[in-house]
Image 1: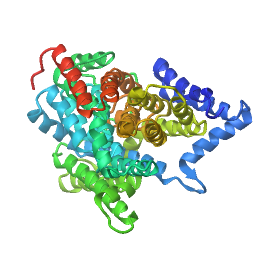
Image 2 (image 1 turned 180 degrees about the vertical axis):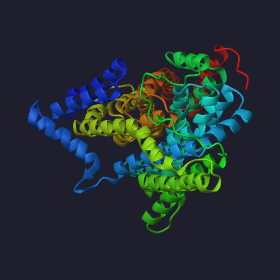
Image 3 (image 1 turned 135 degrees about the vertical axis):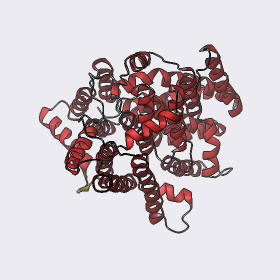
Image 4 (image 1 turned 90 degrees about the horizontal axis):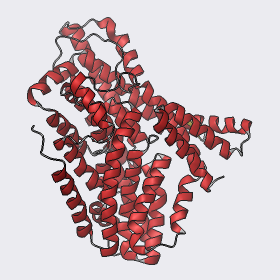
Length: 518
């Protein structure tokens, strides 16, 4: 069943079930079982053995602890604890009161999230969670739905990371590009200059970011987003109370009445500085020879850096908590245990979803779903002018099916380079740009994507609600990008393609009416 049309059945089953039932764990579970059955040739005993291997492989790989997965889970739990103690210390309340005096409209609160999402471009995981923690108190006060916040976070995290050379994404992509250029004897530009030329060709990124600001400034609510926004405005309820929400504190924890802004700001600063500092440190340690900034980000250990930053944020949040207990006397110290438990419990839904998503991702990889999809386009007899748009759509479908943008461009970038080198080497950069944009697009639409899961976690939104409300916007951005890629394929002009994207965004801007006041 590997590398055949049957290999796409498990992800399609999981995705369709998630959309229909709105129960993500159940849907992922069925996808896992379906994938294991195919791998086991429908032998029940072997099926269970394969599922067990996939789950164990999340935590243990080749006889050693799989630190990448373990660190992500620990970071989530630490973030939950930090959030709980920021609330207990009164930091969230104080920050909300401060923001209410300065950010006085729903538009302003959403712009804070969008701008922070663009500015914090070091890593998509960190972006999604950190921006959510900072922005959520502001958007809650202004009655912005969690689904809208999740969309803003998701559409300004990976899109920025994929075009920024100084990020965990950018450094890795530059290395891949360098290998592809060397393979095909392309010497007219270096890997770095090729990446910088590819960035403006990544039309989905610019369409998605442009659409975010149109949506924020003009309050454009497509599909089910309108339901969430109307409930938030009319009832003051930011998310569907009938559904589970990762990252949301369930326990009614006491809050210090002496809390100040610094009770929130210092833990967040420690989290940010600790994470970025650890990324620089781990990257520099791994570089042999001249440790340039690009080399550092290419070799950085992102998950270890996240856990170091999480520990730094945790330590500072503990300092602020004990200051409230013993210095300011604003809270009783016996709430410590409740805070830890409540923080951990708040992140368990996200942890469960991630574990299931990682398991199905491993099984889909063993089924060679991505390889099959890549082979379809490689063997197709197509007009070379359509290559960028076809690769964009294929990368989108691959990332949607597999839940990983990294896996998609890891497979498709070399194939895109091969096709372009054989047919028209001038299309090698547009082809690779289309793959990168399509991978981010598919990631935005996929309920089994880890970055999508973490965006809903950071925003405190139900995961499937986030997927369903973001889908119309992602599809709109993809349609805009597709039009641009068709123009790019036929004209070979990046400026012409960008002009198409900008023109369509301007048409949308004009057609949706007047801007909302700040």
